[in-house]
Amino acid sequence: MDTVRACRETSKPSTSSPPPVTTTSTSRSETVNGSHEFKIDGYSLAKGMGIGRYIASDTFMVGGYAWAIYFYPDGKSVEDNAQYVSLFIALASEGTDVRALFELSLLDQSGKDRHKVHSHFGRFLESGPYTLKYRGSMWGYKRFFKRTALETSDYLKNDCLLIRCSVGVVKSYTEGPKIYTIAVMPSNIGQHFGQLLESGKGTDVNFEVDGEIFSAHKLVLAARSPVFRAQLFGPMKDCNTQLIKIEDMEAPVFKALLHFAYWDALPDMEELVGMNSKWASTMMAQHLLAAADRYGLDRLRLLCEDKLCEDVAINTVATTLALAEQHHCFQLKAVCLKFVALPENLKGKSSSAPQFPPLFGLINCSKILMISIMGQSCITTITSLIFIYLIFYLSKKKKIQ
Image (cartoon, rainbow, N blue to C red):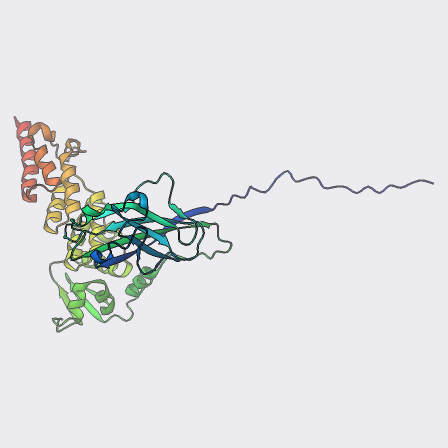
């Protein structure tokens, strides 16, 4: 009789293993801080109560634990011969191995702020924070202050002492990856307000700027600009708030200002001026900075300053410098002066650009520029502009000769 064997084909192990999973966690330690001020009125009557006897403050809570200040007028221990006052902070509630930082201060009452301070805070601790093992554990100084010196010092006034104790309880915890998370999209409130402006829906005020009409929403402008708020809703508001004429401003600049008011961002400068030119976009940023200052839009002003810093060049530095001076943009002014102070920046990069000679070779003015940059001189921008013109003039004269 033949025997038939059934063979089951076994699957081969997969050669591709899943990628290793990497997880992370972080242990964080921080302090929960608090302080208590303890006033001892009638110090002279507390003296003589005996070594080891104390005056205790009321308990106070820091980091989930109760604490109390203990002051020993005659000292805490016999070996000090009662020549020193002792000062301690004690754990006044149940707790085990409570780790904390402490600061004990005897306050100067003369107004000179020369406090006597013993502190853990703000310095490196070789053994780490102090550990209080159980309720009643203390930290402090048996010889905190010599009694004879204390009684003739500014720390004692009208028979009164002021003691301040600061406590920082150490809390440690571990952060791991969240098991479940939901992605939250970034804020798009600017996009929504921008679309509201573009749609023209609900507009209730019109502005005429350089012959062009711009529609907007009073409440939006009032919320964004204190100047618009006063103009539209203040006691001195314009009689005709349906059509307001804006003087001394070009239409593209006002359009950019409205764009920021709604979008909270700068528009595309080159698209706004219709030119693919860094010089044109710099000019627009200069005008927009002036408009931002005029309407109290501080963030827009800083955005314009930042753009002008990025695009500072030899053909725009003079006008940017004058603008910074006029509108008190001190950081922008410093950038312009530093730019001018570098000789390589004054050697034009094309045949059409003015070829300035080395700055420090012509006139020894490095000290003047540096003093102006550091704010130690009252040199005005007009002087700076004259200086730039003088360099240009001397270089031209040198070429002619």
